[in-house]
Length: 545
Image (cartoon, rainbow, N blue to C red; front, side):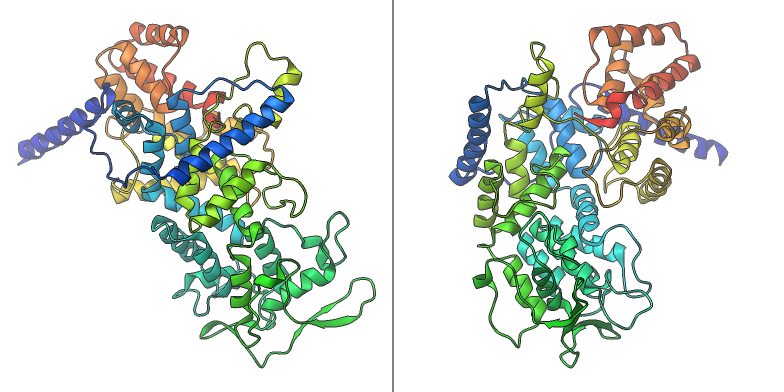
């Protein structure tokens, strides 16, 4: 029976090799990658897109700023993939992208990823960080993974964003059966019977859903803005009767009124729930669940702060940089970038459709500009172009994007929900270990991040890069490319497409093909390992551009 087992093994390897080779060659798989609804063709979509583009062009014209050249399609496809799935495209996906015959392949690519479970899982984690942070939270009554999974389901179904947020603010029940309540239980005070931390949850509602920072108004009137202590504590009072219990999160009517101490006078005060602006949008029924009243007000289509905050955060996730910084501190009354209001109005008018918003932003002229300065620009012109979005901003990849991209670049085929569950489990473990050592950025994902020596050493000497570049015909792209690519030029091209989502320059191609030409048999595989390790450790790999 030994010969039969060996024959079966050889057959499996040959079948897999055939699939790998097919992915290596130009053209890739047949265009049956995914089935998705039609691209948006309604007039309002195009009208909004034109308004956004016009608003930037008017700004550039008034300041005399020339824009960067348009980026090539593969560069833009890489940006979309990193933003929506947290990883570079696979070689398999690059081949399919290039084989697609359509007037706007970027729009097709974006729509396809929006219907991929990788998008909803990745975006759920990004939003969860803004909503509940990264800490484990109170023991027993908080389930962060359950919360992120619920968010993923909502995004996958493209549920209206206002409905999602109302659930987060106003849901009752157990944190296991009603995962949205974890937004509330994440703020429960440890070792306390006092219920939720009203000030913490109030601050998170303001920052995450309205793009307003009022944290310092908890203790004193805001020194640079309109917010007062009364404004802050009126909002916190909406959660004054909210308690976790054996039956889950609920509002206890018998609980006393919300009480706080004035910082300057130390006077004890009790406040009723209230909002600091757009008061006419707050439902008047006093017997309703206070949190439901707040949820209706916060997500009301006529509350511009809600739509603006969402647009600014989605923009930041796509560009790596918010339209208005910081991402959660948008001026309520001061002049703003016109594009923010244009997109916010469209978002509100079309049912708070997150997928539509993503498609609009990725279709803009700004998103598709090159990140390279024009040769004729002076330093001052380059700075002005960056400040006014006339060039795509380069941003360092987050640790999770680095780890996911290493794993994906090291695989010829796409690592998605069609991948065997064993590979997915191993991937999650390796990612977690890498991010822990690389350094998680926590909740503030859009601040400046400088590279560190330990990060460089981890990339150069860490187990993840080593394991994913060493000889392994079954799982590692470097071995498969070295073994199955028809010639050296195609081998180098495949490695560049897998790692950088671009083809090598003439100089790069000639340099690396010479390395492969000098090698024989196993030495050729080792040469490709070295090429892969070099590309993964290149500065270009760790930046979104």
